[in-house]
Amino acid sequence: MKEEEVKQVVQKHYARVATDTESCCSCGCTGMDSEDISKSIGYSDSEIQAVPDANLGLGCGNPTALGEIKEGEVILDLGSGAGIDCFLAAKKVGTSGKVIGVDMTEEMIQKARENAVKYGYDNVEFRLGYIDELPVGDNSIDVIISNCVINLAPDKLRVFKDAYRVLKKGGRMFVSDIVLLKELSEEDRTNKELLAGCVAGALLKETYLSLIKEAGFKVEILGEDKEISKRQYQGFPLESLNVGAYKV
Image (cartoon, rainbow, N blue to C red; front, side, top):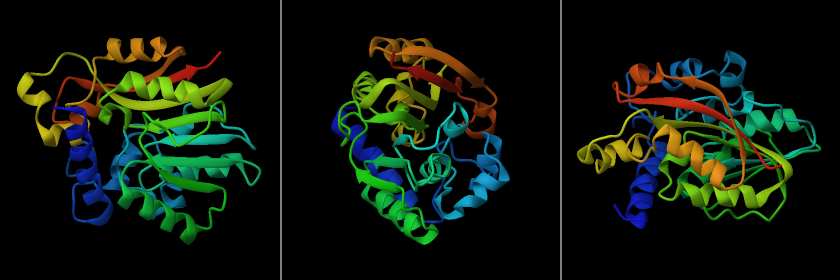
């Protein structure tokens, strides 16, 4: 599939998720609801209930819990969806800090902005844009977070290079994402439902890590969840990989 076609498939799927409460919420559709999914990937009850309208069950981890986020810092969320991770980060940075969410789906941006107003998050803003071409200035971000989104991008190296660009020296990136443990068939690779479902666009684990390093980061594996395949992804050979990446 060509890059533009991939983006259109992903945008159409997540526009539907943002506007249709009956649509499948998770990346790997299951019988679990969004709250059950979030608990299974590491969110606490208090985190889920902080902004319940922002929890669509789309993640594969809890990136705000992977590393320290400090008061007063500027946080960037790649693929912010309805805003759940932005709002959790906003509590940590306080009124002296700021959180920016970037998403390519207009319907998600609208939903996130409505949530910010409804729940009174004045230190969060949401920008429409692609995560491989961020609407963010150079060397302006302290911490980047991303939750089960980079696997959807056609050019992941470009994503990591642009993340490196916007981070300050000494900045950190905490990512939860789906990676493959063995290669998929060509049929699975070209399946649009599996693409939107965070499977068909995923890279082999070793390739994924090598691209982060190629972009200039020092990389640390913070955790791996192989059981997620049974819970959410119909047994496909994949895992949720939690990574810390550092701009030194």
